[in-house]
Amino acid sequence: MKGIVFFCYMVCALFLFSPIIALVSGPWSYVVSLLGDTLVVQALLISLKSSFISIIIIVVLGLPASYFMARYCFPGKQVLDTVFELPLVLPPAVAGLLLLITFGRNGPIGQYLYRVGIQIPFTFTAVVIAQVFVAAPIFIKSAKSGFQGVDRNLEITAATLGDTPWQTFIKITLPLSWNSILTGIVLAWARALAEFGATIMLAGNLPGKTQTLTLAIYTAMERDMNLSLTIALILILVSFIILTTLKFIGGKRWEEV
Image (cartoon, rainbow, N blue to C red):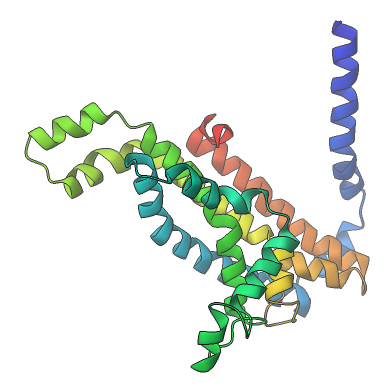
């Protein structure tokens, strides 16, 4: 039994480590020299700008939504909860298609925006919308878990001592659920940064306008494989930083999300 388990473990480990071994053996001296390439710099700036804007929107809208879902019961809550989590399991291309239909010229929202001169598809705004759509459920799920884990007796005690609901939230609820909220922020930002399918469907792949790092890899492969490796290097470093951050702020908590 032990031998079979160990064999399966080694096969799994070798499979997961093989891309890393291939990456390490790459021509890194040349790859590093490409960090200043226009394609890389533009894609990096667009990715950072769009993902930070997205995470701000996600937190502003998602924090009240997650608190509401964690604390209140109402008819249709399970259905609504499923809708909130649906983008987590939707294929990226399907998510992008739905967004394109929604915000397109004849879409339920897009048609009204077009009437006032606002165009969403194939713009920087479309990049942000795609990122928010796919990443918001991650934050909401994590933050909701944090709010649900707060001992209600502590909140009741604070209320009996004269604190208003807002004061109770700031003094008790928010600090006790902060790890889950911060974990949700980091994971949602990482998901936004790595978004590909929905972005290319709604925003296109326009260099210097809507081309993020993940889209740039797709483009660079047709031009120079080493350029793709350069962009991959950036994303690998970001991923490593994200994992390290999650382990630091949440211990095993992030694994529960």
